[in-house]
Length: 124
Image (cartoon, rainbow, N blue to C red; front, side, top):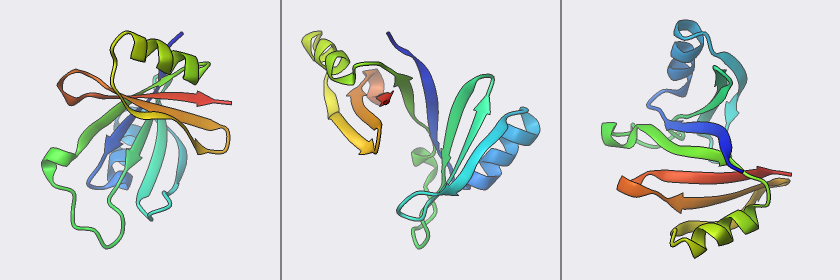
């Protein structure tokens, strides 16, 4: 059973993007901090869907326009190993096999049409 989990955006400025989603669209800010590489990250909830807003790591050049925007669609699953096996059996190409990304959070990535990336995520 798949259900929406999050939309992941690459942003020139994560704080400014969050300001838009919260101030303009009425999203609720859930968390603000940084990833392990120092890149700013803000998580907001909009209409029941989490948006993950990632900025540029310190010391890196500004993110060029073609690299900004929707990064991937995240779908929550239960039994990620079985879901991945079923997708593989139907001919899907997994670009990342099920992996524990952080304690209790398992992810896998599937290549979709036109370069769309789909993340499967299981929170245990």
